[in-house]
Image 1: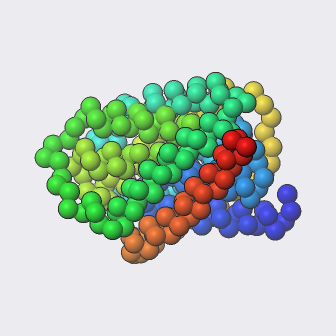
Image 2 (image 1 turned 90 degrees about the vertical axis):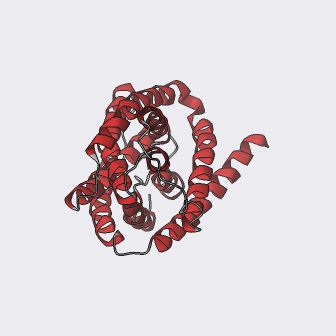
Length: 263
């Protein structure tokens, strides 16, 4: 890979980590496209593992920062983990089963996930959900079930799963918005390492660009920490608007790629 491409990868990955950190998201929605389109990596288990390693760095950097600020809910996190961890193991098995069809299956599922994230964030931006009544009590079963889906998504798409955890916790818990973000990272801090281990155990290929993977992880940790710190001072609309633009570009690119399967 050319030096200019390497520099661009680091800039984009750092940018993603910085802007995802305040949102309760791990960044995998952008890490895979960056590695795929900019670095030129095929969508393989190595690419997914790399995205997960970067996502783990984001979740731990931002998760620690949220805990320092007292923005977390341990009971809510534990409740969600009962579904998220089994779901993550199921997702890892699905990736292993797909093998040669992984690129097509990944992009199909990603389109649905990206569409959901775009709609969800657009609603937050326009405050369409601001008038929702808070649940009077927590629905433990729905939190566990919804988090299970988040775990499957995390393993299959190499993401943190925050795009699932956030709306589930928002709908079925009584926690505040900031506590929900902290809880989302609390789930990822445990779930993503489990996904990494599961993928690594099932992986039988060869690693490549190890130096780049490790260096990117350090870059992501630093940028996510800064993002979490300064994100508290930024307007939500600014962050969400940027998120919508970038994710929409990725969505369009996946549509273009998938159209090639139909020709």
